[in-house]
Length: 230
Image 1 (cartoon, rainbow, N blue to C red):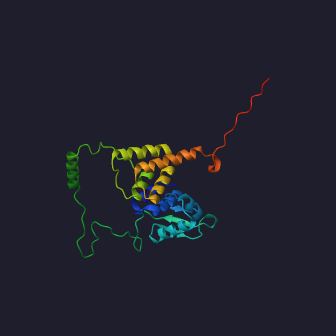
Image 2 (tube, rainbow, N blue to C red):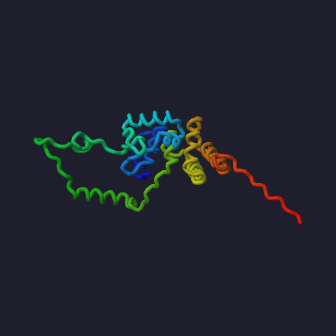
Image 3 (cartoon, one colour):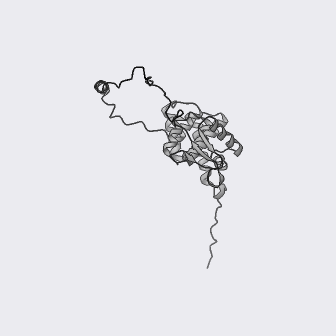
């Protein structure tokens, strides 16, 4: 699992819904170079999908340029996946495409010059004077995966109020990421976007799972041995 690659998928892939979930699942198996070889059956199980649905999503991700597939090149004949999220495309010859800023000048044109460092120093000092507490402010913590998935699924940019945030985070801490992701998927399929309903579903799922024994079956109660009287 590569935390660096997972962060790139969240921030730079542009996917949402099931496509985002599938891309995250592949990235979960990948190293920092984006190389992974999970079986389709494994990806289908991880995303709670059928194998046919998983194959369709993988082909869609490949078509959109989020992954590259080398058929049968992984261990035991599995497909080899390369996650390309966050990788900037390159032009023929290995030179990066120009994405903004000063364009390279022609041999006969005017050559661009670097800005005077003293001007940059003056501007930076002016900015520090206007906002002296900028460096002292701690960075804002990154949202957990379940929060990001909720925002992506229901196309939200922030919480409606502080009570929603508090309830969601408390439930997330109590039940864990997987149970919370399952509750969000259920809410999306049921057309329910209410945070309270999602949290209630997650807690019920967690409570049911904690009562279950091996293989998801209810744990058997053992009866005490009968007391033998003298």
